[in-house]
Amino acid sequence: MEFDDSYFMKIALKEAEKAASIGEIPVGAVIVNNKKIIARAHNLTQRLNDVTAHAEMQAITSAANYLNGKYLVGCTLFVTLEPCVMCAGALAWSQIDRVVYGASDSKRGFRQAGIKLHPKTIHSGGVLAKESRILIDSFFSKRRK
Image (cartoon, rainbow, N blue to C red; front, side, top):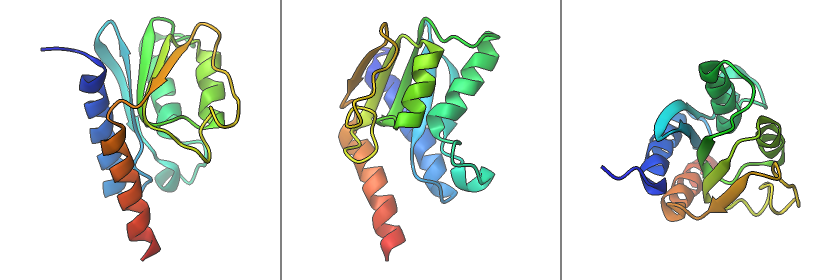
């Protein structure tokens, strides 16, 4: 089995679908270390009544607990939507090696805000972007009706 970026993004998409099924904005995330998933999460802002309960934040906390340390050196985050400014700050502090996202977020994404991740963090987007965008757009179109 090929453990490439799309393999892990598909798992993040399943997390996003879980979020949608409970009325959360459908964003999912997984954190991988040595080709092994050490954390998986989805948005829980509604359920926890907490604006900071984004998928990335949940995944960072879970991965840090798994590793028994606050730094995520050697890890990659796969997330279905470009991280926001808050999540980008947390990712910078975590010193994560890579961030791979699906759909871009032209309104609230870290890139449009000019935010930099940790200097050693590599980031790339567009992995299964179409699938990620469809989930988000479908969720919001249903809410507007």
